[in-house]
Length: 444
Image (cartoon, rainbow, N blue to C red; front, side, top):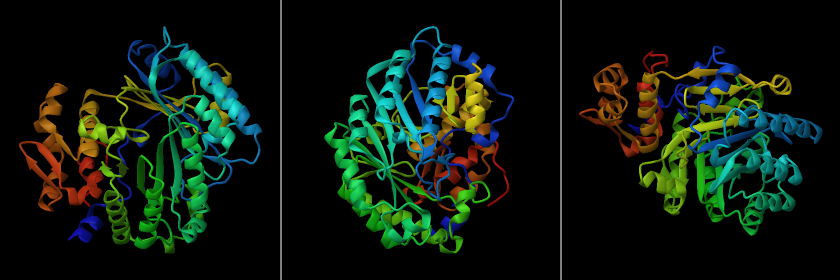
């Protein structure tokens, strides 16, 4: 039964619903002028989150679905930083006063390719342009293969208090197949260095569904990760879309596990982490009971944003750098993906917004329903609709897939309250998709 459910509902084309509407709905009808106007409308006393994208790596991992480029030289990084600093100035000037900040995330790419002194200067600029709260979370993504003690010192001095380390798999056969050879010793050393410099909140990323992966190798990788006792472990399913990401064409498709094998791998990793004392958070995260994600889930205030699951309750996310997505009160904005175009706009004194989406009232209702499903595996549709001034009946009636999901035992529905059964949490995206007004409505 479980295998047939996985085959029927685990569609790789379904969105991950980190945001709604999803990026394919963005259009060029929203541009830099809209972004400027929306920034000026932000409430000056409401805290915001910041995301800074650093799109450079020393080498490219073939599985990666993010817009990145490899460089062995420092010059491209330095040139990019000068543009990024100018963008920070342009954005900050739209607000009548320094906006309060409660959450910052440096993503990539590999943000720690930035030289220690340059990272400190960048943080100093952010603190000058924004009003950082004393309790602000400052997180950085790290590649253990290029991480140094000097960088750890800079992160600690800059006030960084959370680090996310990419692992994916400790299996050397898998590592070679995805062009990411990284020993357990390298990862453990990076974790230890971070803790020595006061950065105690550690996240590790794992992936299942990679070429040559087996249930055994996935369990072994999870066991090695647990031995380092990170606060969180994210366990993502590899999405093979070579038509979209050309680098994935270097992966041997014949070595990829099928949907049943993927489901077995995901379940085995989850069992391993739960047995080690981690709580399962939403679809793909695991956290120790005292971690912010676990506490947020317990308090029913877990959120979903463009970075995944978050305890950050800010309504506004301001994105900096190529391809960065921002969530403002009026809608979503995204910077130009191409570094050259992005730099050209910023150097000309204008924002680099290339597309976006203007939210409607109905979008907000559907987004709230989808977020609660993705975060809590349940949603009180009538209550959510009432809070937004809508009647629930049209939303439930338009969600045609709900009847099939209920018939297959995926969900229980009572008076509009939807609950996903725990054994089927891995197909939560299919439940959320029932409320996606833009998704192709063809049957599974």
